[in-house]
Length: 443
Image (cartoon, rainbow, N blue to C red):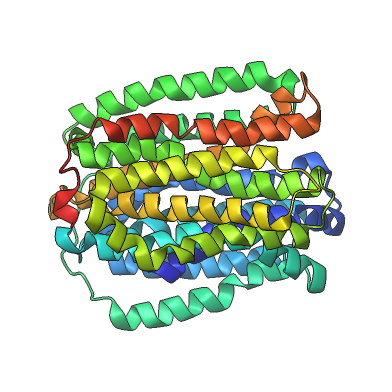
């Protein structure tokens, strides 16, 4: 399951490095290339709400096998795309496959895991989310320099095929399929809401002359969330239940955790672009420093359980979130003549904080959710997580673009890192007001 999650997270981030090469190969204007990234996230956000219903309808194993196989086939389609239009259609199919593959993989793990084992399982589930964005810039830079952009997609084929073969043998077949009524109205409302928010955020990156239209779309999308909440709480057979939001240990991951995901999605991208644009380093050289985020993710792992058991979830989360905030904001002080060791150390500390925070969040978020409610809770969590990932890059791009109208580009990037650090203030406050025994069921 973790290997399929890794494949999806890697594919969502590695493509940024290859966009200029794809543009030259397919003769596409630079300002249109971001569509290959945004269409993937938008499609995922729209169709993720279907994942829980499909998993109940055809079985979790069948749903995951189908989604992973389709992800592999669409990756091949991306690689052999003769035109930009073909590539966009293939990316749409890939986004649909990812919308079913990722939540179903998590659900298979969650429904097999007792609450007191969630900490151990969270360590496995969080790795793909942390490793993939961190290694993507360097891996992407290596591929486009020594191979070709097509290999970015071809890389998914062996990973996906191995996952399907092993998964087919290891995953138990679930025969208790549930033929529930499909909540079409709920799906349309959720699709429109998430689609408007992500499309609005994407439009904003094309220039300030579109910011008014972008703001209108995002505001309408946010207002529609209220309509979605009302519908899901009142209808007899909703697409998924939202009563898990009443549980504080689950709710804080959907609120404060969303702010963390915005930073997690944006930092590797911003640091890579900053080192290339301001420092004029190559994509591969920039990737070498971003890889220290990944080293921090791994370096903290042997101590994660020890830290959590020693100071419990509440203070572990606060420590992690403060580390993320401070290390990210301090990158604003980095200059071209700054020692590479300092840049690497800040990236390393950011990786440590991200890893510890996401392990805590993933362990506690389902700890008080009954097994029979984890399908709906997982679907809701996946929708919000995907939207935060998709919004991360768009949000920081708009912030830097807006700031550059008042200050130089260099300073705008520096303020961008400070902004990502400030985002951590809300989740820190949210965790501070939690009781001392917060998350004890997951220990």
